[in-house]
Length: 245
Length: 198
Image (cartoon, rainbow over all chains, first blue to last red; front, side, top):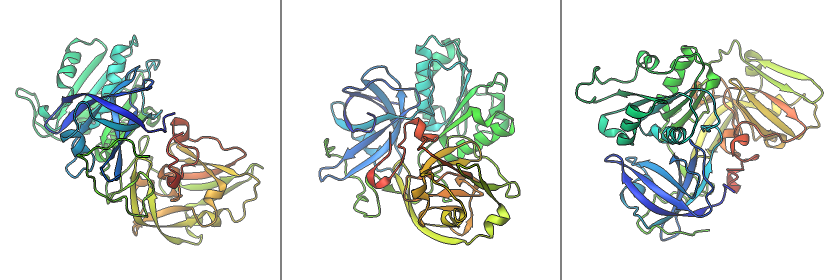
């Protein structure tokens, strides 16, 4: 059952950016997971104090392993430990994977438009990887909005997929610093840039948006105004920093 | 209960706060979690309904709803994603007022929202001064991102039960899973019993 806490062994650690790393976990009895799901992680201090946070799964497996990518939040309670302290060979407790809504299944037929803001790429990467590993021929397109080239997760893998995969197109939007020779100056994502870099309305794609609350709200709003059906848009918000109201 | 110790982990020690249910931490912000885009409902078009097993339909326009007795509520809210916000202030109409003239033998309900969201709530959880249809937060009209013009407020259950953009309550004979309840989440959702997942 997904509600029990289980022990996970840390089997690998891969740096992604200066503040983010991918953590590979092995969990006895884990039975695979769906692309887009999340797990809860529980850390317990020497005196029994514990804290729980949710992290999206970055690689959906069919076995006892999974990966998460954690970005360190400046005032975080759990993420600094996971990014700075945790080592291969350590153990932690996990619950899940959980979620049956913000998921992509290899049996899904529609074209898929993924829209990531910053670390919102994580569950979408899980979908890309599951799609690549499947026989599913549907068209995937990713729009990845990020501060700078250095802030990108999974850089080499995405670069390779962007060049080689016939069923995935990747578009980047840089908000603060663009690569050399980039045709446009860095700026916050606009409705025009968004609509110029996503799949058309017909045939209706399944759209997954993940990122900070404001990013997700704004992008979803633009899509609805451009008459993409609201029912085809699935959203997931990251970072737990909403407005005050 | 405690299995694995992470000796380098010290944490923030908030969980000594008796107001926090197990596994929750306190946040000062108000995160937004929604499954899709936020619908836009002008109050002129807004309606709140209650339907019964006998086919009766009770409905209130925005004006009729605002004419009902209004209550100020101060309460803690607990999201299943582990954040809790303490001492939140709302204004709205008690479900006791809305159900005053409703006759039913049903024990369960399905809350329906503009935009298609649903969540099941036992009738007992809606009555007895424990649930409201709230339209004001912190002295201001409820923002659309947080469910405005009005949302259900059932603060003693995890916050996904407090359906945003509430449109009405359907009385049901059985406890039928709503949207998140069909997607891996608990039918009841009591934070004090940590009823998070199914």
